[in-house]
Amino acid sequence: VTEAIWDKILDTNLKGAFFCAQAVAKRMAAGGSIINLCSLTTEVGIPTAVPYGSSKTGLLGMTRALAAEWAPLGIRVNAIAPSLTATPLAASLTNNPTVAEAIANLHPIPRLGTADDIAALACFLLSHDSSWLTGQILHVDGGRSTLRPKG
Image (tube, rainbow, N blue to C red; front, side, top):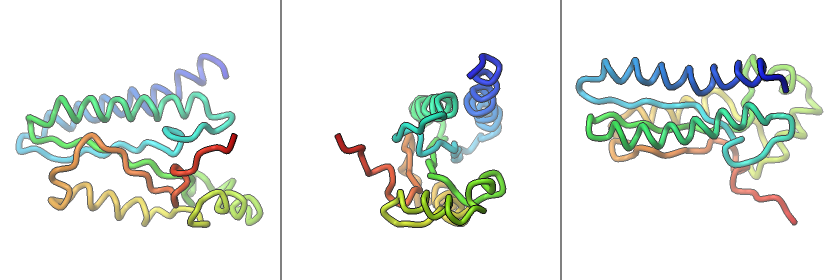
């Protein structure tokens, strides 16, 4: 990992999320809900994903700090943490049936996530039904974050 790669990943996933949240919060006079997209890597170490996992774990810390800071303003801040999801960005993995099946089988619910899985949770977090929920990370990962390495 070069410093340039490290900076690019952290600038995108952590710095970018902070300044987007800050800009949106300024316009939420009546309160609202901000959702950050974390990752399974906040709970599970993934080899070769040190910068990515570090950025997403930092994003979780930011989510919790902003939730505490902005709750008095009526702004809720939560995070969704998906496992690998079948999206165009992940197509190099998910379009290979052998790789996709191997990854799916790492989950107690043995399938890959879908955009609909994440969207359904986002709709809940944006709704009044979650009005007393802030500073939380919700894993959409087929139960993978509940598994701990044997040893």
